[in-house]
Image: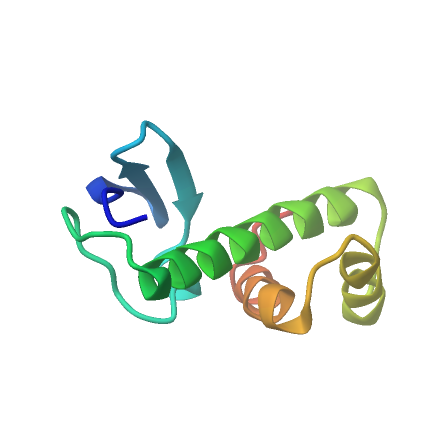
Length: 106
């Protein structure tokens, strides 16, 4: 992983687009990252962990939006369904808080 680095970061509204030197692009929200990241920084194992959790949190948000749009769900039911989809509480708690605060899905 020592050759891998963040080539650029850009914001669209409150969505963060991160481009990596191997051509991959990942999306997350800044509030889902445990620590701020900077462009051109090498992707160490710590940075990879921060990125991975941030992306998983954004995926949990997207999945929660799909579940909310499909049918009315309480927070408890959303948590249960996200756990069944393989998300941990650490991955879905912040996204559900974000959605509750923003009310983005309806």
